Length: 224
Image 1 (cartoon, rainbow, N blue to C red):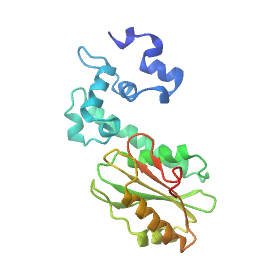
Image 2 (spheres, helix red, strand yellow):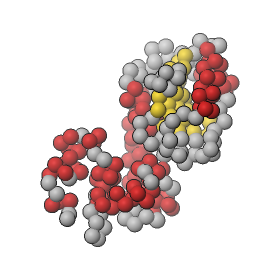
Image 3 (tube, one colour):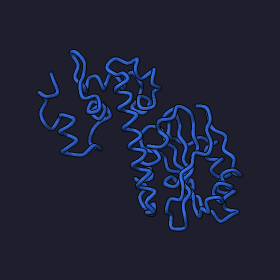
Image 4 (cartoon, rainbow, N blue to C red):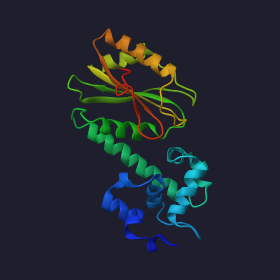
């Protein structure tokens, strides 16, 4: 059955307009992006197959060009569209944080960090440098590593914080595996960073891990 023949409140586009994007499943969101299916398959059917093939929405979004285009129903045009959408999202959240508004919403922070870090196939450690009113001074990717991890040096983080005259910081790094639970190494480096920055009266407000689903907050779990 074609999506046009579905009840109106079950069609992805109408559902989004009536209830908002957050009400849609990953497959429904992807179906809106795909717009059309293939012979004998609706866009939702195709979206479900692609999510099963890649393993998750995050894995599909992070796929390299060649891998992405090998999948049935995708190609150069869809890859270009996807990259453009993701870059617009990154710029949107970057602009909202750079207007000088204080960081008062964890959801805005999560959305920004997800847009910045979710597309990498290797681990990236980054930092939001903030002033004493928790307004964003600068976002910087400080260390990059392999899929197994990134080496993080507290001395270098402190140097960048002092360079920006930061009063507070928020750390973030991604887990390319998609698992957003902190490892023991994540906990240890966070403690070391807190100790190093405390020498300069610079507060560590949070450390987020970006994987599948909502980014994990150290602060919300009592680890900061």
